[in-house]
Amino acid sequence: MAAAVIDAHNVSKVYNPGTVPVKALSDVHLHIEEGEFTALVGPSGSGKSTLLNIIGGLDMPTTGNVIVSGQDLTEMSANKLIDFRLHNIGFVFQSFNLVPVLSAKENISLVMLMQGSSQKERNRRAEELLFRVGMSDKMDVRPGELSGGQQQRVAVARAMASRPKFILADEPTANLDSKSAANLLDMMAELNREDKTTFIFSTHDPRVIEKARRVITLEDGRIVSDTAQTPLTHE
Image: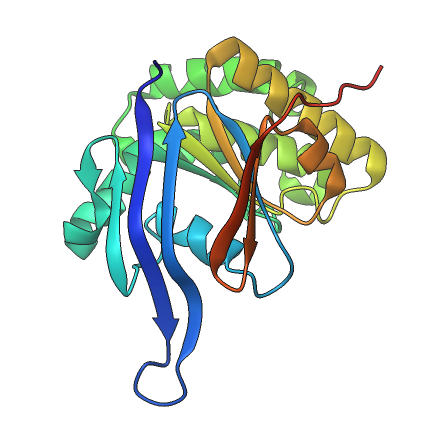
């Protein structure tokens, strides 16, 4: 049996509790094992992005616990949580979030610099990852000179640089054309198969849902279905 990466128990999230409360999540239980390729889906306001942020330690639940690799995020201080995210969780955002004045290689190296890796290790790892995501020829290029699909490939490489326990991807294909989205998803599926990297997506995109091996549907802050599936492949 694969190791548990995430265990969320009785997670609820209420915004504006002192005025007009908005319940974003209600008593959610979630178990994610190492190597999963999972999509959180549902309409706007269903709670999927809130759940993704809580899993990633970017937000805290109002009630409940989130255990990541045996450690409870809800019991960590703010500083410890920052350090934990840096070493254990990779993030891929809809808007890429690359540093515009840094090259592709420097953007990837930045995470490892914050971790205290040597320059030799940073260079080796960044070059290896750029090769893995098909961007070796863009190593010294800045984000503004890259297409959206190329920027998102760099963002995935950056997310993997720290060798995280899992990668959270929030609508990673939303700003990409169909071809770029398909190429990005194929690449992430390959990284998942080859490296056993755990990916968890929050998405509306049917292309992402097709690729997922597990689809968790939320409505009104609750998980209403949790389905294993055989992902579609495209020639």
